Length: 175
Image: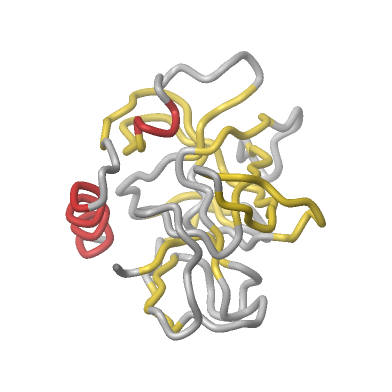
């Protein structure tokens, strides 16, 4: 977890990410798999495939890229997908609370070796909790670097808290 926070802080400041700390409800997608929507989205003038991840909603302090969200306050019925140093939180598929497990991997060309970025993107709050966990449906780019907003390339080092084999696990790349 400390390595992930160090990467967030070092990489973020090195590439003009404007880090901020938000307080309140947020979606934590760090362990979520992502499903392709069949749509594309544009981030800073670059086109990416769009993915959808279901993520637990937590409450507390979280890290945001303020250059992306501008304000910690999300519109009604929505939350921001942000990052937090939570050591345990609800995780798919059961949404039972489980320990966060950091994993490093080599980014590849398949869904199981690819990654998605949900950090500082807007999510829709789902109406019904599952197994006591409030959930959000989040949309973000697939194979996009959270640090530079460029396309990540196969062979780069990636990190995630999603289990090995998850499709386009939410995470990031090491610069």
